[in-house]
Image (cartoon, rainbow, N blue to C red; front, side, top):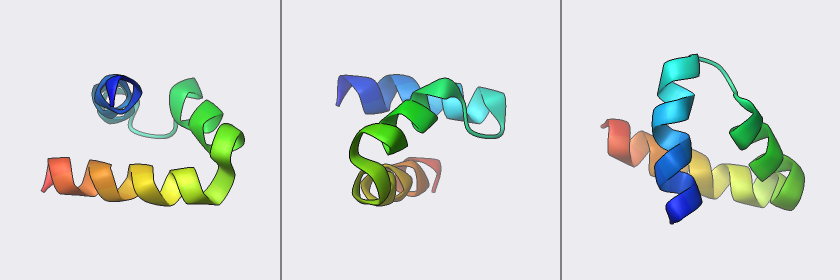
Length: 45
């Protein structure tokens, strides 16, 4: 939760994929990316 909360503003500020998102994907790969993407879309919406 802490990581996602910190990554959301960073993702918005970068406009693309910062190191945080890349690390998250590299850690748990597609599964983590799907969960993260869903959370980001929900917050942005």
